[in-house]
Image (cartoon, rainbow, N blue to C red; front, side, top):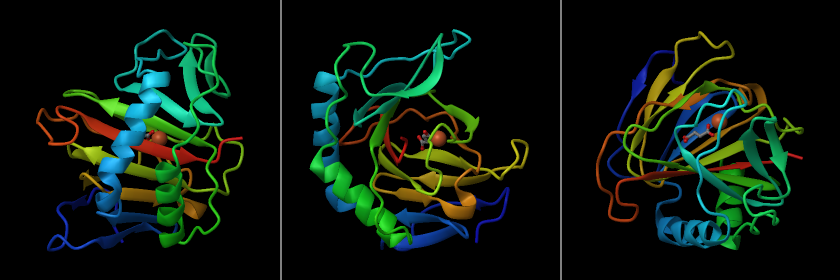
Amino acid sequence: MVENGESVTGDLFGEPSEVRLGDGAHLLKGFALAEAARLLDGVRQVAEVAPFRIMHTPGGKPMSAAMTGCGSYSWVSDRAGYRYSATDPQTGQPWPAMPADLLALAQSAAAAAGYPGFTPDVCLINRYEAGSRMGLHQDKDERDLSAPIVSVSLGLPMTFLWGGHKRNDRPARLLLEHGDVVVWGGPDRLRYHGVAPLKAGSHPLTGGCRINLTFRRAV
Ligand code: SIN
Ligand code: FE2
């Protein structure tokens, strides 16, 4: 198991492998690799209808990653606060349906990590460019905390900060590469997590970006 403050890098000889991050949390190295191009096609389709945008915190600060989403709901943040919304505030329309390839991948990753029967109603999509980051936070706006979070990394590698149950627990640093999936639930569902600033680079499928998909059961 990865201890706080520990650094985990690389994959084991390029084979899909699993790293335990806690009793209820797993890093599935390369789990989405074979599906990555299809997942990115799905992201492009979603973004045609619900474009990536920079949201603002309730305090008015721009967030570092651009976001969109699909499914029955997605997460939004503005002056009125954080919430899940059935419509995209930018277009007034419902969020695009979750592409079947995205849903299938989320369900198989959840099952592989010990969470069979996962039925996400949200896929939040984050797009990071060089220098973008996400500070330590808990995912706690979901009503049903018995469902896990499934997080899929595509494109440029980024350092994931895997913290504890208290904000000031020192986080482990894990390199998340193209095709990696992290699943956290059960006793680890409310662990603090974030990502360190993205280093500039170029990836054959995403150019200068990293795309992260987080599947949630929100409502
Ligand atoms: C998130 O916590 O919502 C995103 C984490 C990530 O980009 O890996
Ligand atoms: Fe999160």
